[in-house]
Length: 146
Image (cartoon, rainbow, N blue to C red; front, side, top):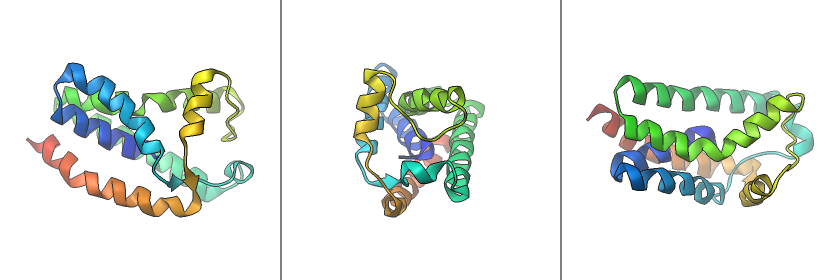
């Protein structure tokens, strides 16, 4: 799932649950969302696809914008939930920057193996991914504005 969808779901969880419960629930939501079909292409195409790179970097920008909005609006539980929900992907970001900016992730530990095994990526997965994200947007905006 995209960083945006993880940030949105974590923000919602942070808004709806008490903070001590919201953090682990948001973290767990990451793996639930990763089992939903979502956008992805073959490993061999990822590094050469301009569309894939544009989607990834645009997605990260949108997710960061959600976090900045939560911080600026003092919605700390939503920010914490968004960070917790996204956090499993931090290992993938670290891998990308530590291994020559490659999107071909080779698991280096048990957590990465577990995390990558959860993924259900397909090119057509963009449609369920957009549906999930668009369904969450009004609720997140509503909570940010309260």
